[in-house]
Length: 215
Image (cartoon, rainbow, N blue to C red; front, side, top):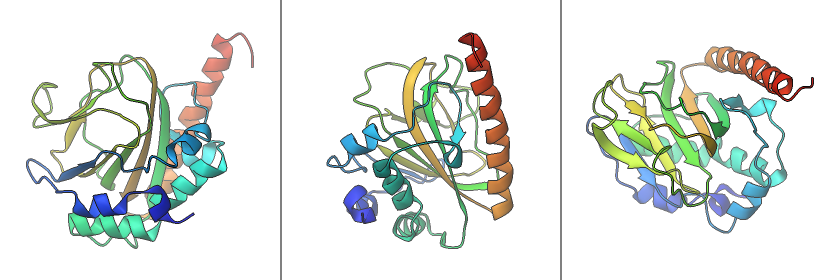
């Protein structure tokens, strides 16, 4: 399946980039409505909180096509054009979340090894007051909001990982599906981050099995 069959690249090309206090853009409905049911059915089963590297997860063909599309040349070229960068030679790293803890969402900026952060939300219409990502002007006030992003199905958020790219959200506990893609500085970052996440994921799963009374 072509990227254009899955992603609304025209809407991405047309989306304005806000530049203050750091560059970002949003595209509601970026994942095309026609493919969302299949992607949702093939979404990895994630019962634990935290980020899981894509290579550690099992998923079906529709989700695989989706991941191929967002890691492909067309998407990289479109995002690079919007942010004035050549991303064609930059490695990508993808992690997936399926659950949120009550203490997730603390204000932070991403690692300096990440150049661009992409978030794609895959929930139904979001009614909860918590769990809505906020782009912020400052590192210590969750109400100093530039923009709020409800994690509705198919919504795209992209931002440049500047030193002041603060973001966070009010606490939410329960299912919250989000794909994070980063273009990073070099391939060593991918190896280190995936190794770190794999170790973390192993212990999360082990703790989950112990809590359930089994191994």
